[in-house]
Picture 1 (cartoon, one colour):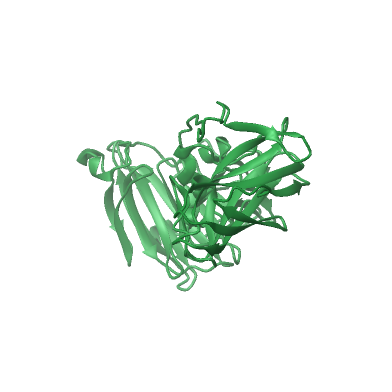
Picture 2: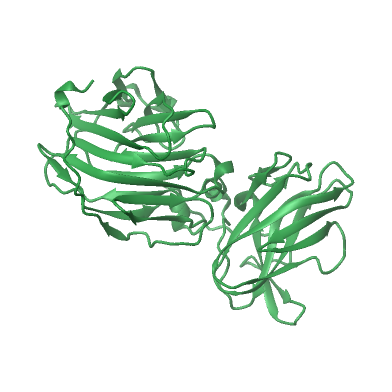
Length: 431
């Protein structure tokens, strides 16, 4: 979804200039500058539960020495960097913590005026750096609140890449979403989209949405909602643009026409608003699932959208839901798939999905043979760039999260010769 970018300059002390950089010298006399990496947008609790990441104050409520907070930033050029901690507040008592990065570690006394509290590491290749913090000893209730990492590097080096805009902290911790945009092999009226999804083993992290059949007015795919719950999700946006579904006028609300067994329906908001349906279904990683979507005008200025999911256990198509979108007169457009994480606390984990055997129907089935890669505003604003797409074997794939270093230029086009058989679907027998 589109996310607006805002220019943000972080000022935390009188010595910080308008570029957000603090200049000084390291122990060798080399001129360096500090960049402030806010934990509020770049940190995660990767072990334990005795700490939290606040979207305003960074690392807080840090009580458990077994908990680990991990902060990520991307270095753009090789060279030496130094890492220090900036505290927001303490309980008035000193504490010591361990700072670890790339096989090096340093014990830091928070609140101490001691010198040499910088962890120095050498970066041999550009890429993401992970810094882990673990409490060692405390005298108060907590180890202290850590607001920023101060990362120094030699003057003249490219600035680090990290989430530096508070408007993006929530989205950056979720991670960038990415998309495969299919090239439609027809100039006719497309009434059906067909696609298949495989989530590789181990890539089904909680918080993942693997969206198969995206269209101009909605989306249809599978989610991992918790360790014990998974869903098939189908949603259609209202033509009335708002994040609050309660503000949609009655004449622009999405109307439910019918739904399948065990399917729940309602409204959704926060990222646009509209009608939503989902069915709890324990789909499995490593298995391929089929998706079918229909979109046709009703002849009265509206469009009806219907989604079906093929259940391997029953060897048949099952209805998810059918919605009527008012003030809409269109066939299916903008066939795409996407990958996203919808739980910020899970954004440091990686996930991947494969899409294959795409077809469109305009009176006859036609195979999709090419596609392109795109990203969301979190990536485009350079708040976070761990998202790629491409072709693997007989599938397109998307990957995001985990702070990996591979990159694919947004807009890259892919060719994939679809040699699969035409889908064997009897439209008249669909539920």
